[in-house]
Image (cartoon, rainbow, N blue to C red; front, side, top):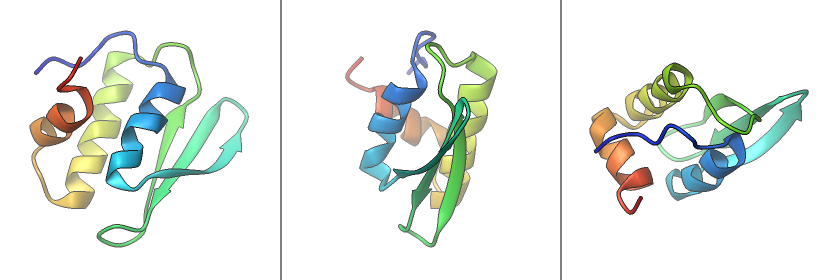
Length: 82
């Protein structure tokens, strides 16, 4: 499954809700999302119209590591219907 190249920070935050992430803070042009599933975990995502592919890759890798799953599982869960 390929990652989208045109996903916004707002859309990514909405998609990550399925992993229990909610916006806990906004500072400038960044959002901090927090989940309590599998222990507390925070991620920072840019609040931009299009997130760069490398940044998106890093965020998804961080989420996968927190949940102890493969990054491909996160990609399929988030973008499988795209």
